[in-house]
Picture 1 (tube, helix red, strand yellow):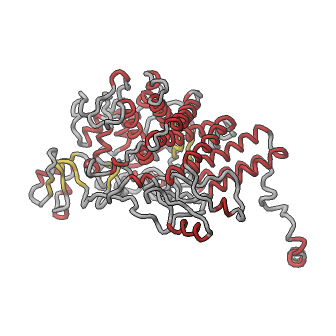
Picture 2: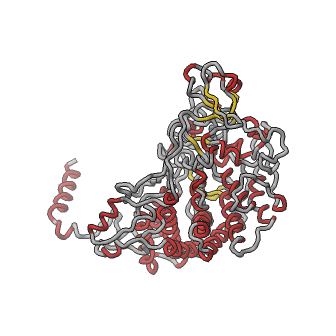
Length: 609
């Protein structure tokens, strides 16, 4: 004991008496910027710090940002009781952050005015450059440069999708470089050309494998590149009328997706529901990257609990989304020959629609959903059977452990076929039946699980270019082929990342206007005396309403229960605030504009704001 005390005292004396010399020496036992950048393993650890922001999966604990069901619920697919969520009507007082914690603005489906990850990726890129000669082989140098450039391109893609023009930085900026720190926005096309260069470098230099299948590799990167370049290519076409840039970005989207599709590594070998409810996605041939959860490691989430049929779903699927599902014979419901295809009640729709409808929604109306159409997509088939009892930890609270697909083949092939179809409108080769067969028809040929088979669910008939559905609801400015590709995305990605970003890039935010899309405010056809007689009670008088096929609204008065048959109208529903095209992009905060001005610089506000 005396010896230990002597050592402690000696160390203390050394520490306090030799400050001028001792404290100025680099530590030999702790990591700092001078001694960290010495190995590939350290680079890998640093890169892992990006994963929580870009490969969020089901988030963790009670986190909702970038998580399906709980994060992505603002689109024309979903409706709530009361007043609908509105776009903002004026610039916020402040809109900025320097935190690396994932955060998402729901109504813009992207980050705030935050350049922390831009700086982090530039820092990594510069440190990799410094390591090149002493610590990295040529292969390692190219790979880790590609990793840093991938994350930089990813972050700028998201920032541009939210704000349009943003300041672009391709290196670390010093505090003394005020002209750069406070420079105004760069044009989005300049920024996205730089992102394009980053992504082409990634596809040429990132390793196809970095050891574990869960480490970022070229296939994973290619999947995300197909997503991000599809967004920008279609934005350039539909918003900016820039055919040259649209072709450039769409071609990269198609090339990136093709790299994954032709690799032979992935296939549609899984039923749809297993992609989202499985406790272990390792080995699933459709999943390119997933996030694994493990209770023993205290890595859990809560998304399954909100799909267990007991927890509420304040924003749930509306009639507009339900109508968009194709029938199993490959036709729209207005022209399908399947029995009861034109009936828009839940039982008829499950029996007649594409299998993804049954795999996405519970098969009876649930009061826990605002529209009574409840999604059980993000839980396995067993979880809901515990309703009315006690849920095991994997299905309740924030202790869920089903794995999350982060990038999957279903998205890649839909990105590919859409990019191909859009390129065809810009002078590229026409889409062929073979293209449809390896994309949309491959998805439609997914296996069905035992539950779906027992219900009599059938795979949807293959799509034929020679006989595309004649949808009376198709927009006049969209070809039948592109319309059907868009429909396929809508069915595939319910409650996932896609819908709001899709209608933004297609310049179709008008779909969110109930004045022109009244189905937004309706649920499915309900026969309350048969399906939910427990709602024909005094507490529902003057609250429960249905809309008849002719548009007549019937309100429950306590004595007209037999007449409560029609499209369900969520309680107290009212339209969102009016909006204009300026909401395609977000405004920056007044405080940020003021901060620039105080330094003698100008930060331009987003157009229209």
